Length: 290
Image (cartoon, rainbow, N blue to C red):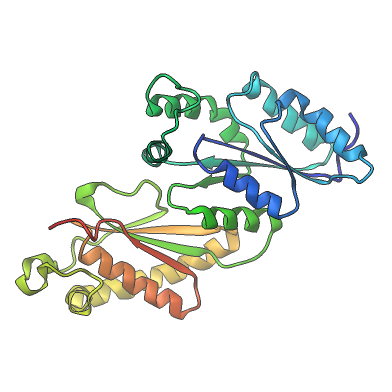
């Protein structure tokens, strides 16, 4: 094989519907030569052609998935061979919760490629099982469950280019009554705080309102909890920055996701923004009926 030691090669794999097209677009913006679904057996020959082209192509991104024949058997061997040649090889794997993938398929009205005549969930589970070996090779695994298109692109760009930037904090409030979010790194149960639901004047409000937030965080318990939580978050974030983590998702949960969790999430977001930290806040259940 012709040496590819000067090439930067990024393999992009993951579950169908997890954002591979978006990831490849981000790499294309970084001047990578991008190719979708090239058979794994042809990868060495393709890279050799890129190396010997009249204008050498040194930044290459290849999107691969489990539908390719012999993909799972050939891929680890190809990656290992490239690394013996000292090529800069990275494997990016995009993951996503089953619930979110099912919703995306429903919205686009597409059938799952691994279950064209069955349920979408059957296809997702089959693909997840098939890709276990690829996950083990991944240099970066990105859970796209809570990421929008722009956030995913930013994550890819930051990782591949090595651009330094502080970890972005995603704060999600929710109600345990409706289940916990699927993708959070830190989760706090705030059901021990004073509950505005039992105050007639506050029940119909939300944690976005000052009167409700004051009731939750203005008590002695609320003030002490917030002081400790704020210090804990301040302690952790520099370590995530140091690791180069693009996003940190923190979940705040109360019973219904309308009062306490919303107030705490907004308070933490305000503190972090004052420090210059980029913060995204979403209140999953705040609009649900009482």
